[in-house]
Each structure stands twice: as C-alpha cells, then as structure tokens.
Image (cartoon, rainbow, N blue to C red):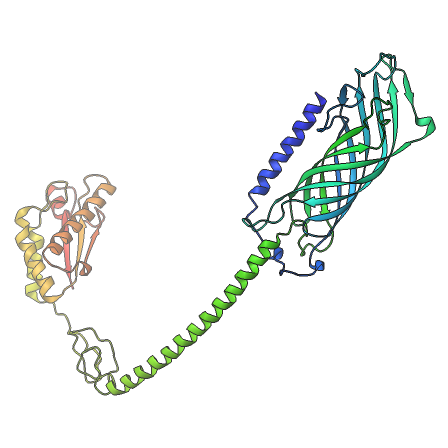
Amino acid sequence: MKINSNKKMLLLATMLVSGKLMAQTDSLSKADYVQPFSKGQVFRTWSIGVDGGLLTPYTIFRGHDDYGTDRSNVGYGAYIRNQFSHSFAGQLSFFRGNVEGSGPVPGPATTIRDSYKTQINYAVDLSGQFTLANISWRNQKNGIQPYFSAGFGLMGFQPTLRTASGAETDFKSSGSVKAAYIPVGLGLKFNLSRSINLDLGYQVNFVDGDNFDGYNAGSSNDKFSYAHIGLEFALGKSSKPQLATHNPVNSMRTEYLVKEMQLQNQLDAERANNQKLRSDLDATNANLKSLNDKFTADQDGDGVIDLFDKCPNTPAGVKVDGAGCPLPPAKIVVTEEDRRVVRNAIANLEFDFGKATIKQHSFESLDHVAEILINKNFSLKLAGHTDNVGSADANLKLSKDRAESVKAYLVSKGANASRIEATGYGKTQPIATNKTAAGRQKNRRVEFTLF
C-alpha cells in the first residue's frame, strides 16, 4: 500500500506538469534565439539539482532478488552537471537512504534473514546522460526532454538482518561495506522556466556483489532502484538559453526567416523609393496643370475665377459679389396677410377629445400655413397648452403630442422640419380661468409664432 500511494503521487505530479508544459511548446521568446554554429559560451552548460524519491529492491529488470517482498523508503540526493553538447552531458551524482526487503527467503529454511534493512551512507557516481529529443522540426522549442543515462559509482552501505523474532544482526561494528555499482536510468525533464527544470527519473543500480542485502544467494549480484523527482537549476546568466533545452533546428529556421525579412525590407525600400519618384513626377505634372488652369479655373462655378475668389467653395446657386463671397440674405418680412393666415389656422384648429388627433375640418387652414412656410422659408414655433383637468404629467404629454401632431402635418405638406419647433407647456400657462367651461376651452390651444 505504501509503494502504490507513492507511485500514484509521482504519476499525478507528472501529469499536471506535462499538461502545462505541452501548452507552452509552441511559444518562443527572442532570448531563445542563438545564431547557428555559435561557440559554447553563448549557452548555459552547468547546472545543479536536488531530488527525492523512493528506494526499493524491486526493479523493472527482474523483480526481487534474495527476498520475496520489497519495501519502499524515501531517498534523497543531489548532482552537478555539465552539458557538453546538445545531446550529451556528464553528471556527478550523490544519493543516500535505506533499502528494505522481507521474506520469504529462497533456499533452505533458516531462522535468520526474515527481513533486512540496508542503510546507504553514500553513493557517488559519474555518469553520461544522453538527451534524446531536444531537436524538433515541428516546434520552436520543446518543453520536455527525455533522457537516458549510464555510469559508474562507489557506495558505502550497512546491511542489518532481522529474524522472525526481531533479533538483529548488523555489520555496523565492522564499519561501512564498500562496493562499486553501475547506475542505469531514464527520465523526463520538464522546462518550468528559463532556469528551472523539473526532473522525473528512474534509476536501476547494479551492485558489484551479492551482499547488499546481507545475504548471498545464487550467482547474481544485488540491485535496487531509485525513482525520484527533483528540481534542476541552470547556472549562469538567465539571458542565455540552456544548451540541453535549446533547439538548434529552430535557430537555423529563425536565421533563414531573418535573412528573408532583410531581403524583403530591401525590396520594400526600393519599391517605396520608386513610389516616391512617381509621386514627385505626379506632383510636378499637377503643378504645371495648376499653373495652366490658374487664370481660368472656377471650381465652385460662381462666376468668379479662383485667382480672385475670396470665398471659394460657395454652394451652387448662391448669389455672390465681385469677390466671390455670398450676398447677405434678404430680410424676411412677416406681412399682415401672413399673420391672418396663422390666426385663421389657430381659430380652426381642433383635436379629438383627450387626444392629439387633428380633426379633418382643420386641414384646410393648416394647408395655407404650410404654403407660406414653403414659399417664404419662414420659421414657426408651435406651443401646446391644456386646461387643468387631469394630472400635470398627462397634460404636459398631451400638449407636447398635439404640437408635434401639427408639426408632422405641416412637414407632410412640404414644410422644412428643421424650421419648425414644437413644445408642450401643459396647464402651466393658462390665458383664461379654468373654473368655467369657456375658460377651459380657451386654455386648450396650440399657439403659432411665425418669424
């Protein structure tokens, strides 16, 4: 149960980190570009790392060795690494921890060796690490680098044997047992940032001897595994990319694109220069044409040539003086006849009760008002009023609607809508008492002001 829970935690961490990094695979900052065939000093090659994980006698090669049941223990370690090329690095590693196993023990029955615990005081090895996939033709930068490693190391350990009754036989009094071992491993590195990598690895350590578990059985040597997770920190300036994570194929592609862009910029510059020459030629031709037309051109058609026209762009049909400027408009005069037409329209104006609908017999007098508005270009203000019957809000709305109804009718007959203003005052401006029916009738009105 302890082994299964620890493996599940490692698997979950791997899935979460790889999901994040795969989403970032196609992003690349300018700082990741390195000119092809640059020397090694443009990269960061040295790094250090720390890790922790599970130590167990069980391995993927042949399961258990001298004991039938394995146990897992926490181990920890550190390393320093130098990347010699994009695909090969040398690594000096150190780790320690405990390895445990228990019976049944193969071979003749015995009262000892029911279980064992080996304390690894130190394990130091020098290995070569081969990066398998930092070169990609599809992505600008790979977020994950799988690797394989193998090397040679020395360790000091102290095995302790336990009987079924719990009695122990250990070798501590005689000091640490020393033995050589061969570490073989594989793993994945995830690039968390420009300077930090997450390292997930599995390493099988082949011990040169059969006494690692304190028991000699058979002709095969002992071995144990170390599954670990850790952080690797690249040393040096963060502006430099890591050699192990750098994709040289992408640098070549970027170099090609830069050269292509430079060539395109040259072509664009020549095209812009040609366009400028064409523009200068067109400007010269335009100046010659302008000089040719200077004494005859009359762009606004007001009869005054542009050379002497002090008011250019005069609207068509506007009368101008000798300098080409519009003559002042004639003064608008409202005659007594005009006022009579308006008074007649006011007198004949009636609406349906409580509504803004104009009664049909009022149309004829309103038609005469529309005629003088059209013919003389007069302006007209319409002011609607009511008596005091009903609420103030209702009367204000009714007076406004009635004034707008008169405006809409006049506009439908051809009057200029922009020269007609319609306003409602409700019951706020009575001209007679609201205590009598006759007074209220006078207050229900629409006033016309012609100007």
